[in-house]
Each structure stands twice: as structure tokens, then as C-alpha cells.
Image (cartoon, rainbow, N blue to C red; front, side, top):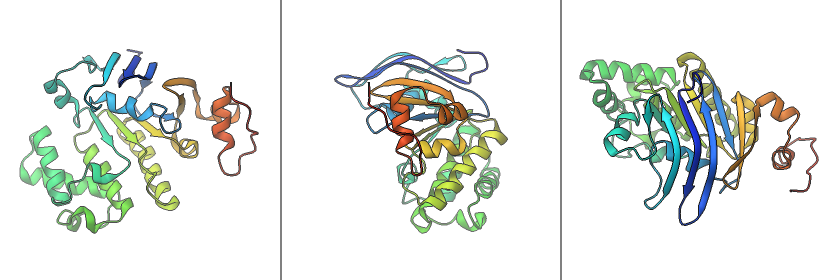
Length: 265
């Protein structure tokens, strides 16, 4: 594991019938947002899912994913259960993937922290209110009694982030967390993720196909294509002087871009 990295991916290979991710390496650091960008099918979501052992049955994974001293590749169910939510949490593109439609927001938040942190019912409720307040859900006390369908899409995503943060994880995996939201709401979610990374010294992996999203908050960006990371650089360097033709193509596709698209090689 690289010095000070809280999560380190090394020579990761993923195959599901055929190779889909080929030998990628990536380190995540406290307080920093690392972007993993690429088109649909590039392998970026598979990479994030592999961290928590959430790949489809039949997937073959080799290489190493280490969280502290814990090796996650090949880990048993008990080890993964101890890591999921407690040390590494995930926010999905669609909050309905993580929010149960038939359970109140309060139940979902308090059950999570009571199971992982052993808090009393009263302490868990207070923590739930504080979390909803921090992610700027209106009227957090009243929100505990409501159900996911009673909130807007942006508010549901904020609730999903609150649940992900409930047990003070070291790493937050955010897989296309703003794709389903309109531009104004998207900006608010991105700003929240950036603030949380700094405040909580979270290591954030932001997975998206949209380099415009990366330009808002990522400290470093890795560009992925066909299962391989083709370029990695600090945000400013990547946007001002992209080195790989594929990165230049992605940047040229952004609205208002002045980059000229170049032939692929």
C-alpha cells in the first residue's frame, strides 16, 4: 500500500466471461477526491463494486485491494461485512438502490448505526438528526418519520449520503451520484461531497462518465478506457494539458470546450 493511502488498488483484473478490467492500480487518500472517468463499459463501475465484493456471481478477480491491513480480494463474507458501511461506504447513482421504500428514513439511519456502532436507540436517533442536518435535508427531525418517496431526487441522494456516512467510514465510493439529477441539484451534491471529504478527511472515489463533474471537485483524475487507466493527473494538469488522445476526446465533448477532437490511436 502506498504511504498514507487508506485504500490501495493494485494490479486489479476483473473478468466476467472475458477480461473487463486489466491491471489497474489506484490509491485513495484522506481528504482527497479521486475521480475515475470513462465512457459506459470502460470498467469504472466494476472497479468500485469490486472494492466491496459486490460483483456479479461468476466474476473472477485477481490482484489486490487493501483497506489498511485488510485484503478485500478473496475476503470472506464476515470480513466484507465488517468493512461495508463501517470502513468503506458507497453511494449509488439511484438512491432507490440503497433506500428501502417501505422503511422510514429514521429506521434506515438508526438501524445502521445501532448495528455497527452499538448505540442506544436515543443516541442513534440523535446521530440520525445530526447527519440529516449536515447533508442539508430540511427539517431533519420531521424527516426521520417520512419515507423515501416523500422526498425529491436530490433530497433522497442526500439521505443516501447521510446513511453512507453514518458510521464514519474512511472511504466513500460515489458511483455516478449526480447523473439522475438536474444541473442545479447536481452542483449542490458535488459541493457537499467536496466539503465532506475535507471536513471528515474522507477518501472519496468519484466514478462518472462526465469530466465536467470531475472539473468541479476532483483533486486527481484517472481516465479509464476499455478496462485500462490511460491517463492519470492532477485535475488542473489534466484539464489544461491532457496527454492521451482519448482524454482529449472526452474533454472536446464538453459543452463550450475549445479542444479539437483528435483521431483515436
